Amino acid sequence: MPSHFSDIGFPVQSRDDFHALAIRASEEGQAFRTSDGTYVKWSPGAGIELWAQLGRNDELIGLNPHFRGKGRMRVRLVEKISRPDGTVLDAAFYGWVNPSDNAAEDGDFPFVFDVPNSKISEPRLGSVVQVQLAAFAHELRSYESVEAFDKSSESKFASKSFIPSGLFSPEGEATVPPEAHAIFTGHVLETSLLTNPVTGNTFCWAHVSTLGGEIDVVADPVLLNDVVTTGGVLTGSFWLSGVFLDAADPDR
Image 1 (spheres, rainbow, N blue to C red):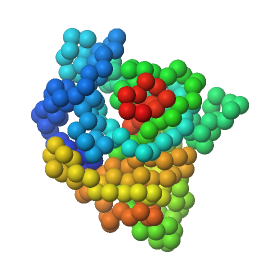
Image 2: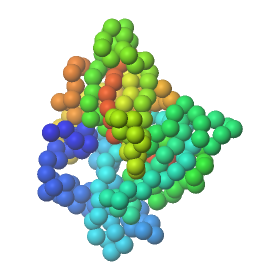
Image 3: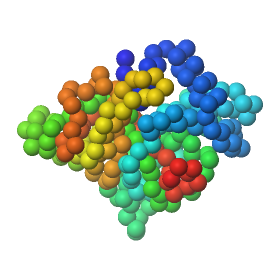
């Protein structure tokens, strides 16, 4: 079954699989200590990142995936989101893309994204930052061209569109707390079938231009209805993971 981990080539199918992967990441990665615990970043290659979390006593408390790519969005940070099931090292932010200079909450659209390493160097709320944004596919459809997309049943949306679906339920009620989920459509600037160097499994990567900026899409190949092509269109639903490039990011 596809998951955020299989979107980058790790076939995590059980709690035991998850625990074994978290242990390996914590043992083989680079540690970044904070006052609340330690992040351990494992970067085995192909843009893959796993961020393990250790508590203050160095016990394993979490693991989050990320993909380091080319996608960039300019975001004003408005609110930090806490979730009751999160760890002390988890973080999510609500913000506005391409914000107005004259208003704290204005811009192209608001959305929420999770951050796997926020406490290494966390920007202040109200600041405008560059975010490298990765979208992990839940559902995905590809089209060979804008024209093919426009002729499809999906064409009720523009070929560059973004819906922050994590902010509200299907009935239109606000989601509390909001989730780092989105439905978007975009033009494929570049794409490749990448190989996870740890497992040998392949996954699809696409650098996509959408409303508001550019995003790196990663997907388990079982989600693909067709070959993804440069110049084509991708549309689907996604989980969003972002890292701050204006902060003390070791790989900016």
